[in-house]
Image (cartoon, rainbow over all chains, first blue to last red; front, side, top):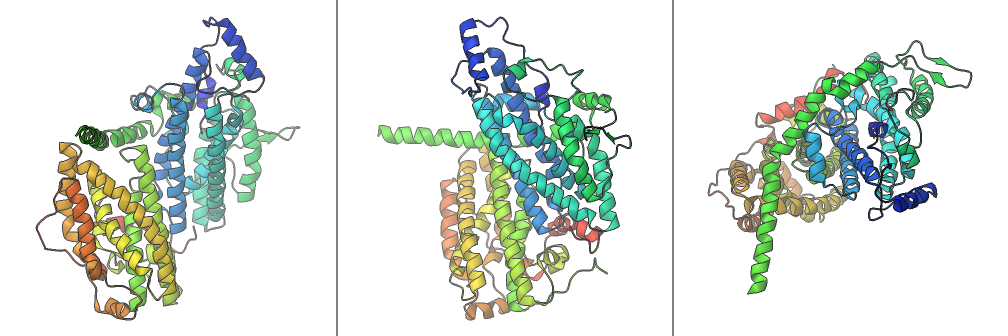
Length: 330
Length: 258
């Protein structure tokens, strides 16, 4: 999901040590060739991708928490199984993405430690709470929907392992999105209380979801480098617009009101939203969202309480190895 | 009123299916509580997998119970609209997750039993139960492998993991006897070739469990005292809390469709 990381890059390729390599590298990118782990790449390309892929992985793992919050309370056995499978998918995405990031030379342990230390970011959307069952529908419908908008272009990202990971991730996300929408359809066809629950969830998630695409283009610090390297292919505002235009008719179908009374359709048929409260975005990024502390605390707790288990597995593996060596020596 | 508990006609076959369904649902629910909080991402995946297997088994068994009963109940009514005294699962599976060692020991004790049980049940002369058994046996074979490997790693890992695993064995041992017990109604099903007698599985269960526990440098307790009651609805205090969470939406919004 969650390509907030696209909005900054770690320097550019000016001053690279090897001008010949660098121009060869750019020529391959321009020819739409994939860069693979053992290929030469500029240090800044490696750094940008390591940060982006690992932030994406952290987002998948932290993203398990808000939805995991409802697994034990899912209202039917079918919903319970689907939600558990969905959150498990997210874990799988995280694992897959950590592996992709590792191909760039940083270990999963280092990446996870940076996240637990609060040094690495994850998508801000997961710093909002899931208060009702309708939040589970809304997350699937909107958060996964926005993620797909962000991620489909990444299937053509210049870095091979990331692009391939995205192809698989997008397939599962699109399944999750449909599942979420189906939860919303059921709620909106249900009792008045259920429909009110659905509207309330949309009211709370709409603006944070629009923020998932990152700051507006005119103030975005995004350098041209990511575009030149074919990591990023569309601007934040382009993707946001695409998302809104796709979502408005879905909300109409559900009979729900998008909480933006000022939203109007322009002459091109695009839905133009009212100004987004970017102060809220900055606050959540700065650690002041409703759940930032809870999310990090939960991940740290799992990590700390799991330490003795990981140590036991390592100790046992070591013992087994030395027993085998001793046997072989006999 | 729609929030009231459903009534169940507990004929021997309905009761039989509900007992196994309840085992699978409650243990699956317990495993799902780990999701997002496991000691490693690989374990998050594995625990969710096993939880999903068990949920699937529960759904098939509930649906079969509903069909046999024929009174308009369904999987969700059985799961969401029965009170603690109507639940028929083993006391073992409702025990809280505790630490990872406790979860794995609980899983190990149950999975070794379930694997033997479902394998034997494949010979049931009830075709639905035989089919459910065939599917469940494949799944429980993996659960046995996964949990056995962890018992050995934890027992033969560090001093701390050894201590935790031994504590878990000592605390959960008294809940294993109930797996092999049978009441009169179920005795009738056994005589009719529909169910199998779990008591016949005990020597093999004990042999497998002892083998792994020894390999793990752990020990089984000497105590023979076994807790009973889950099969007839006398549960530990833990189940009520689990159900109040599991059933909260169905109880709060009576009659709604989700």
